[in-house]
Picture 1: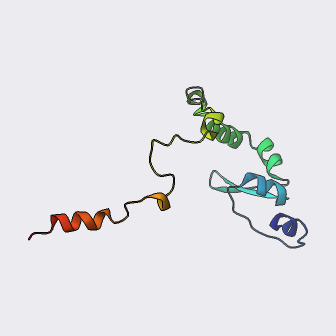
Picture 2: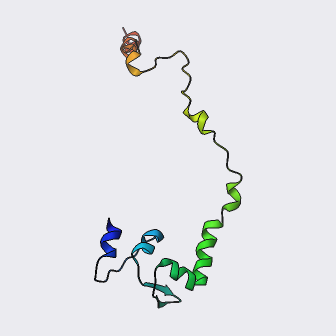
Picture 3: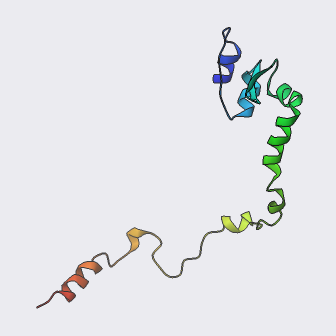
Amino acid sequence: MLEEALQHFDGSVVVISHDRYFISKVATTIVAIEDKKLVKYGGDYKFYMDKSKDFKAKVEARYFSGGARIGNAPVVDLEELKKPKKNFGGAKTANMVTRKDKGIKNAKRNKPS
């Protein structure tokens, strides 16, 4: 909804966002701060990434730095998670508990005479 409104807006808008998908949808010009200077790129985010090789290398390095650890992650069996948990003889719901007044009985028993 916001993307469509900005795409059809005739004026200028300054957008500061971490959402690269959003920027690529709404931006027609990218102004980046590089080496303490403003650098203007006439195009969307993909155009900016293609033109700025330094920045592209930095972004990709952040995403793939933990790639080696992904192989060590435990495998989770989703079918096993869907199975109902075993009931070890207890009540199935809180309403089925029969000794709701247990705390009162213990308080009477521990009361000094």
